[in-house]
Length: 202
Figure 1 (tube, rainbow, N blue to C red):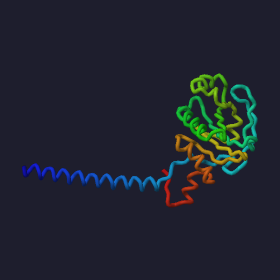
Figure 2: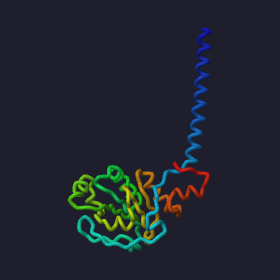
Figure 3: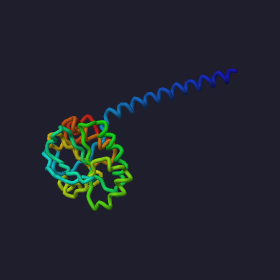
């Protein structure tokens, strides 16, 4: 019986030790979580920059209606321009996320999915991703006006017609960072982190 008692005592000691190690690791994970800020959208030197007024462009949406993009919105809504391509796999992956963000923001956010090229090239893409129910535009001048060079790319335009945030968005965190930057009144989360040196960007 004595060896059995000793083995049980050793096992309990090991269990208690492991529990202490797990608690210590959980505490360290919490500390790291507090120190690491979410990754922000990748911002370059594209114009118009955050804080600048947007150009006013008129284009034709998928169903033929005339669409005005840029400038103050008469209904007081913000506009999220999401630039995509039928050949961009990341764009396709992010479409549900973009819709989810739009739905969460409600009627105060208008979503415009933008691309360029011939209509025939986009018809299978539009049908496969149910983009007929969205505001979808084919406009090369729109992409050039915002100097979009890589995809997927997003621009958040305020109701006052001023760029609130913009950048290359490769994942949900990048997209959500546009709204974080808007709420914090900064050009990007990187700018926020640089002004708060106690935090680091993931």
